[in-house]
Image 1 (cartoon, rainbow, N blue to C red):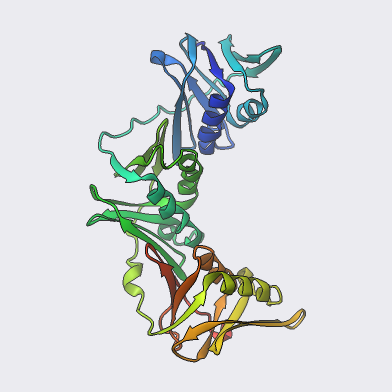
Image 2: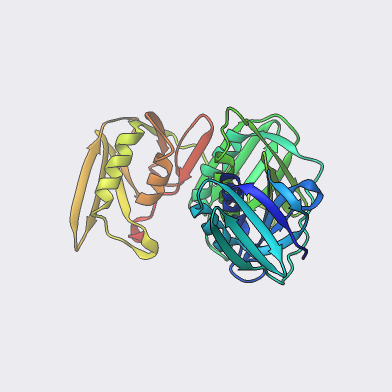
Length: 364
């Protein structure tokens, strides 16, 4: 490590630190952020080996150097600092962080972080809003079962000028798809790491900065934004062809998504909670959709929502799975269902499909 001396605006340092600390871990030296003022650029970098984030921000560089400082603590301090220029000066392995009448001294880490990997030359343009939606509308459906690691990530693919993202836990499937011209790529991105990129992408206005740049090479997913480079180690293995397992239910109901969502939320309050936290609700397709639940201890609930139906019968679902899907829909939607229970229920819109398997009577 070498001595470093820079001055940077508080709001810029705050944003850079809040971004890169998403990649810090709890143990040293991976709890640290590397600050570098080499080659006339001020950069911050952190890694937990599964995700690496580098951010660059404008600064007055008085002395080039590199240092490691505790990431979370430095970020908390700068977030509470006034909106004035911040000075950081390292001498004898002590970093002095100062502004108008205030000084804070951090012991710089004597550890070493691995070298920041260089971003590949082959980067592919993707619309910002598309990648945000791809992650946001699939991450919730991903499995947290450690025995099936390959489905603990989001499958991201661009093929035939269509961008696909898929998340599944074996009981439901969320599939985002949209037109996206460019080179083809595919890989499986760990969900927690993918979600860490959402706030970064959302921090820039879509209209002002419409694109991001991605690459899926070897074992890495790369994301380049305006002032940030992120690398995520992808999951190994062959992602299952889950879409080929889903049939096309013949029965359907047209209903207002908001009305059905609110009814399920209310009725589930009196539902009995079963193993794994599931609260089943019954959907009875008759004169509308009647949502019902019961609990030996709490009582029972029933509410009917207006709907146009093609057939009558009933199915039982995990209420939270239904709500996860309905919160992504607005207005009148068509729900496809299979009373024989061979195929999952389907709902969605132009760019998104969501499938949920019904529960068996004995699952209650």
